[in-house]
Length: 350
Image 1 (cartoon, rainbow, N blue to C red):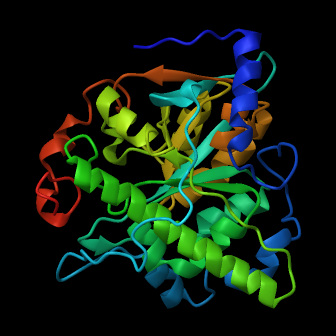
Image 2 (tube, rainbow, N blue to C red):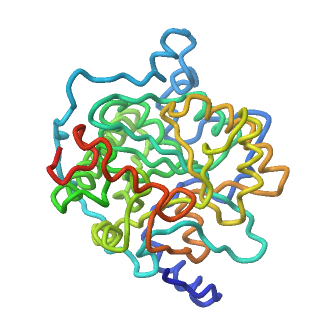
């Protein structure tokens, strides 16, 4: 395992190097819960509150969350297969697999992260209840999005991108196991997602300009989450060379037993300042929204505030490991031989 000094000087140098990383436009850090929803900031004015929320029609709401199996794997490429603007060189201090961030004394922020993944064999959902809970609490969060999910859910993706409380990261095109994928597949999974995000960013600016609002001019994606958490030093090096920091987690937010309250309690007991929490926003599992609604006020009562992953990185020193995993090294190796026929990890490129 590679170790980093936690000295003040290194933290200051890292903060300078991270100036190139995009930050949400909302200033400061929000506590994890508030009783009333704030006015929708900035570019979110493109949508009405009803359009941002879960559909009131029960059937439509359930349809948005459903996971739909496809008759044949969707192998189609996006309309743009490489971003026009590549990500800049990654600072050396962010190379490797980042599990959490060591923060200065007194900084009690944690990063809630939500994967929005989708394999070639299906179309996953979007849990508007969960995102609404975050917005009502004025919480900050990071969403790791698959490129195929971005293409399947363009309007919801645009809403997430427009929200200054949220940050977006790359989660591979179709949830490929980057550890077993060859270089061609890895490159495709990264670049297709970056390009699809760029297409949506352009669309978002067109809409803003049509309303005579200031365009966001979102910068290239700078964060990457390994599907299944699988990767090693060589995997991370490949991804880092694309300008992306590999962000994992030190708290599995959906792995506990019991009801939503028990799992929210388990998260609060597991986090430390600088923790990165793994959750999902694509209705896998189905009751994460209930966990989040309970979790946010619990965190606030413990004195924690929410932050995006980028905000943590700009404030502290990343803790880096040599292998990606869920809770213990090796606990995700089973995924090296799964899903190979549906485009999620085979060297054969399927």
